[in-house]
Length: 277
Ligand code: KIV
Image (cartoon, rainbow, N blue to C red):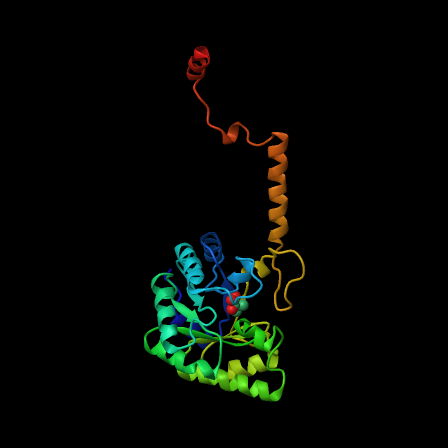
């Protein structure tokens, strides 16, 4: 099967087929996502938190995105690979073109995701005119968290109108899709109906054309409370802890490794070795 394209993305919306997108950050995970039939991968700058252990996405740089996108690209042959442009890497049109060149040429991303509304429309237009597929991101945009906080957005009429206007501006500028993060479900459904291009929700209800979730959230890799918008489809973190403590116990008690994990020497070689001592 060939790789998913942005045209397939649009066809899925046109045919009323929902799009499942997932963040993936490395080779092994990309192989697993492929086996599971994930049609669209986001190499998200959330890697700053879940892969690098940082508090926010702000310290993530273009090199980090290239490093992770490359690994994902090696393990994925069928999914559409969208890569985040990190904080302030698209502050001007020229910055955006430079970052896009690096992320696509060196990282192998097929499309880029940028946070922001009407104010970044000129950047989106420039990139799309240069042949770069761009996905927008509205609502709770974590790169602006020091301005807007990490709370639900566009709950009041003025902010909701602005979000709809931003979504239209991104579509007009050539975006092929828009992530809607943590906004009221009713607004997300309204935006999804108003736009021709697909909307991909996270914490934005079931009325979007698709959903995106973070790898570590859906697999239950971290202990403790998950974000409200996340659903733990498994508790892989617990299974990993169980498997690894089993390994530690077996090494400590001497029951691992056994003959099955060892190579042997012919008896005559051993005898010759011992006779020399
Ligand atoms: O960086 C990321 O993972 C994201 C998603 C949460 C949409 O932007």
